[in-house]
Image (cartoon, rainbow, N blue to C red; front, side):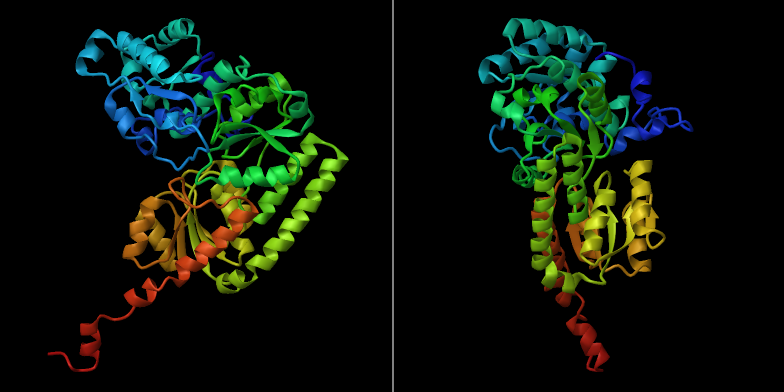
Length: 460
């Protein structure tokens, strides 16, 4: 990839490049423990379902991270295959480039993928493997794109890996125009690229159905349920929507500079955020007819949603929740909960950017505790002090809530329910009510039989 780390850390559209800051912080020893750059690159690129993904490194780099997110595919499943060069100690000493070429050749001959992504790891970066040259030679030999992703874990955080993956997509896929040209019919329809939407639990399918009602087509999915050829068409879109925080902002900014495609950051969590995103798409694409169509769609969907949520809102009104997540969900999910009548009394900010935090404060004011770090102990402290009725967090906190007898809803990338859009809002409300009213809480909060016996003076 072109450029240096200093150039990328000075991203002009990143909040860390404001006048009072000097670009993204350099990684510190141990910083990658919560997700490294290699992990971040995989998160971004693995949802490209029809491509092959090859890890050039020891088996542990593959086994510890593969399929850790709930990104779904509507068709191909080649990305689910765990390809690795499985470097041994001897390969590390003698060099693993020959093994890499053999692995690429085997994948190309056996599976015939439209492209192969090859990921570097800490080991291959430290031993000085010329992965770029090996990929170029393999590309000429097999006649398919073989794309190097230079994202060793020690390069930085997970978000930094997202950005490195975006650079690989721009340089090797989008700018080379790997996709077929648009037909006249495709070119005539308003289109959007969804950037940073990973189709967790199938959320993108609900979003796509909603956009189709508005007459807007998703041209490229970057990268949830993505197809390599479609991503190559991304330069023809009318607008880019950055869905997942600011990790892929460099990709959106470079496409704006190179292809004059405007972009904005939006969310589909909650009726208000969904309506804003639809209106922003209509505004950037332009046209009175599209604007009227979007306004009519929002009005109809919100009226139907209000009617459907009425009985659920009665059960949720006045409940108090602690929300512990990150990125776009850290602020957009607050809006969704408030629309259901739930008061958010605590919000996790450990994975949120400064801009995310400012949006959190706009929504909760001084009524909520911000939880920058501390893990389960800090979350429980907030739950007890603020008398929260439920915890909304990632799966790793599930057993904490069970031990403490706190109703829980999984909101992170491992979940199996889609909560985006108006349809997702209905699911969210129903699942929150189910979590609060689950019969197990009445059972576990009863005194044990022997405790009741002592209270009645009949203990033997």
